[in-house]
Length: 333
Image (cartoon, rainbow, N blue to C red; front, side):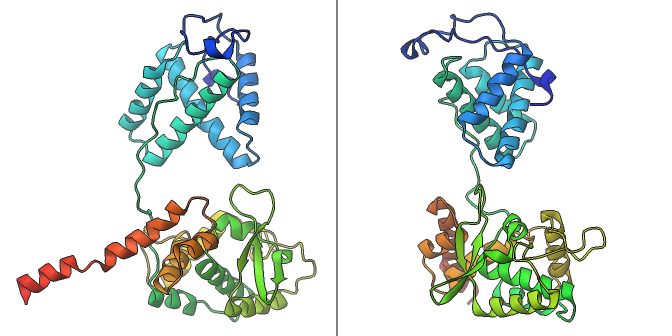
């Protein structure tokens, strides 16, 4: 971490203590670690979590910074289970979102899992649970008529319009995240058998290695856009900026989110629950509504855990539940 003053002095267990002695007692503490030692511990911890993603490393750094700050403010040098539990409660009292609390607590749990493995400090956070997360998505999806309206309001007579149309079509049909749209290159479009696929640079991946089938309509629109753009190098970004400041350069996630929101508003869809991420929810929901299996949608969205995909099916089943209509028929008919 760059801001070492946010660290606190945690007193370690002697490195020579055998693994079975780690859980005996916390009275085996030694002198406090200095700031350089804490920095070394953090760097070693990053290697332990085997994180190849800069974003993940940044998340751990930010989360642990808050933990060390809490210990320093409380004057705690020998944290125990109750310390981690109280820290979690403090985060709740501060009004932190459940996802934020989950990230902070999981970082602490991973950190102490590592300290015990290295025989530096017992795993005091082993039995502390993270925050209870909602089993519902925070963003809405577009109904078929709304998705069609969004695409129809885009003026495709300009390079910018052709790009925006293709970009929205890719996101709505193929379920790409904004970061995956940003990372995509022209060379990632390839033929597999009789189909055209886009190899996606997925979340947490080091390369574009996740193939997603490209629908015929999207492929045709994309070819029209790339021809109009006069692409000369396959290593160019699939979608490029048209702004004067970054003309022909790689777009940013912020720019894409802004473009999608602007198009939504033009289509009369101005809701805080409708964002660029809604296009991904739309791809999943419309797939299920039109006969795709949960497994197929899991593959489309590249979810590691099928339970994440099952939330879409659960919400659809709940929406189709006729119980409320049965009551309505009794009361008003």
